[in-house]
Picture 1 (cartoon, helix red, strand yellow):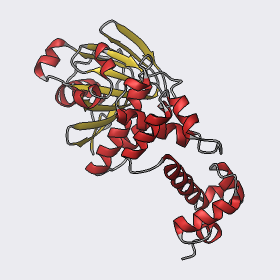
Picture 2 (cartoon, rainbow, N blue to C red):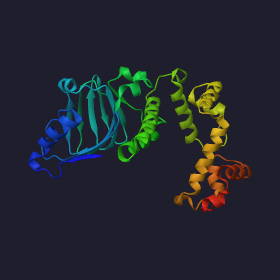
Picture 3 (tube, helix red, strand yellow):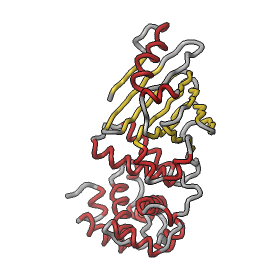
Picture 4 (cartoon, helix red, strand yellow):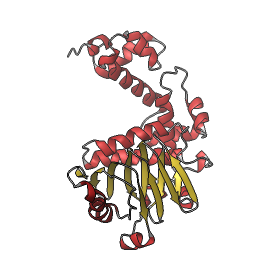
Length: 308
C-alpha cells in the first residue's frame, strides 16, 4: 500500500502539493483549486495491471484533459464506488450526480470533469479495458455508465469492491475477486441484454448469485432458477456441468457450507440448529443431519462446539 496525505504539509501549500505531487504523477489529472482550505488523503494498492485506491478530501474539482490523456494514454476503465459525500461527474454526453453506495464506470480514454463534495470519500479501481469489454461489450457505447441501484448483483459487487480496495490480498486472491467483480458489474449493467446472448461465465455468475440470495427457499429448483435468470433448463444444466457439478450437488454443498459457517458464527449462537438448517433451505432435518455428517464427518452439534 502507498499512502499520501496533506496532513503534514503547510496549510497554504496543501493544494499545490496535491496538484503537483499526486495528481500529475499518480492520478494523471489536472485539478482545479478550491476556494478555501484543502486537505486530502490517498491510498493506492497495485497488483499487476490493476490499481485500487481510496481517496477522501475536502471539496475540489478533478479534470482529465486531452493533454493529460496524451501524456498518459489510458486503455482502461475506472470503476468508482462513492462511499461518502457526492460526486458530480460530466463525461462525454453523460452527466450524473453520484451519492453514497453508487457505482459508476468511466472510460479512461475520454476527458471528464468531476466535482467532489466536502468530506467526500471514494473507492476507485483501474482495470484494463479488455477485462470488461469481452464481458460487457455494451459498455463500449458509453463514456460514463451508472450501475442500476436496484440490480440484484450490486450489493455483492460493492462487497467485492470494498475487499479489493481495503484488504491486503495477494495477487491470486486479487485476480479471482476482480474477475468476480467484473462479472457482477457486467450483469448489473446489462439492462437490455438478452441473457441467452451473454457469455457462459456471466450466465454462471447470474445463476450462482441468484441461488445464494435465495438459498433459504426450499423449493429452489432448476426450473425456478432458469426462469429467473432468463435461460433454459437445458442451458442451466450445461453451465453447471462446466463447473464439474450437477445443480443438485452444487446446491446441497452450498447449503451445507452455509450451515457450517452459521453454526460457528458467534452472533448466531442463540439460534437452534434446526433454525439454522431451515434458514439455509433444508426442510427435512433427518436429511440435513445425515448429509451434514457426510460433509463434515461430525454431527451439527459437534461441529458447533468444535469437537474433533
